[in-house]
Image (tube, rainbow, N blue to C red; front, side, top):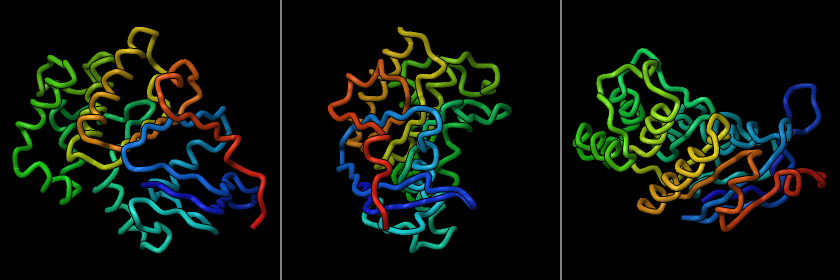
Length: 224
């Protein structure tokens, strides 16, 4: 599902931030990628999602080499096939719960077709699955942290994307909420057979994954 080979990226006038000789994630895998602050986690995610492109080497996502796509095609690809859970959730505060969840299918014909016109029913289904009993017309800014997080998960899941990426998803949660969230995330990905990549420095959740990688171990140490 995701493959990098001799992949390199550097910001202007800086040494390479990403130098990955070989790293792959198979369809349906749930991978925990651990990395300290400044280790290149955010940059790597920007490459996998097509916001940036590798400057040399190979990066293939879902069979496509992203650097060969024009920027607008990469944007479409990201919207069609990836669900993203941001560290700070990134909900639009003035929009309702329902409109935040539906936002991805407004920009993705592929996700829209997967829901087959039953958009509002899907919102209700997701909220039920996520045990979120809240007025769907309530503005996101009036939700608790836990409620915001569940809305962010629902937004990532709508349209059944093949890949779910979570960037430091537990950073704002205490122990009990952290466990509940991980149970929820795993359950939803298993229902959809989604590939899951969680990138974090939170080692307390690493044991839940059947595969754990250290970014420092896979990044660096080769020359193109």
